[in-house]
Length: 280
Image (cartoon, rainbow, N blue to C red; front, top):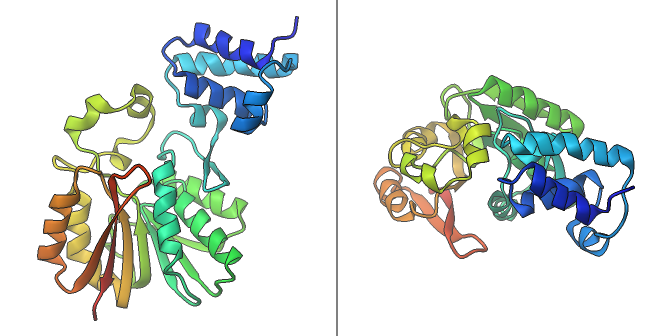
């Protein structure tokens, strides 16, 4: 007898008892090609045997702590379907706010770098949203230290028909000068591991998550290198851990006294983003 969507979520709870209801609901609704609101309205809808068989396979992976986005092979970011797989960070909702902030500073003819691009989600969203605003003649670059990340981002750029120059780089070493640099770098402290979901720790690349003993290793190196890689009046946008604002403000006050620095909270009211503009 065919199962309903609601029954499939219940089946998922039996097959993957450690999985959260949110993850199960997300997986079932995505496989059924339903938005969250559609899913709520159609929970008593019966599904095909093909969909049930697919979800049975999915629940086995979920029981092994594989993230739903890796099971599906994609994640949503600012409305764009971004291909992801193990070896790249799953893009987060908070990072969408960083992109929206940076968008307000874009203008025609800018040269832009997505530093530590991972899946390329930031660059895809930034470029596509800029096009909607009729911002023209952007020169786009994306860099990462990970070969697997570079392969995946190139596939996403191809999927969205974007002309992006991809470079392998450790922070900014070997890269040229840009008008704007945007990055969601690794910033989690090792002591915060116990606060993280186990499927994040088991699936997502450590080098994209952890930022050294105090979480600020990337930012120290970035601050030392940034002047060689920004044009006059160049700008940067960085995400950071909400507990790191005070230390980051001290670091930038010391290392970047010739930059205007502005911090911004995320929608949850936590310090999350920083903007810098070189006063040269």
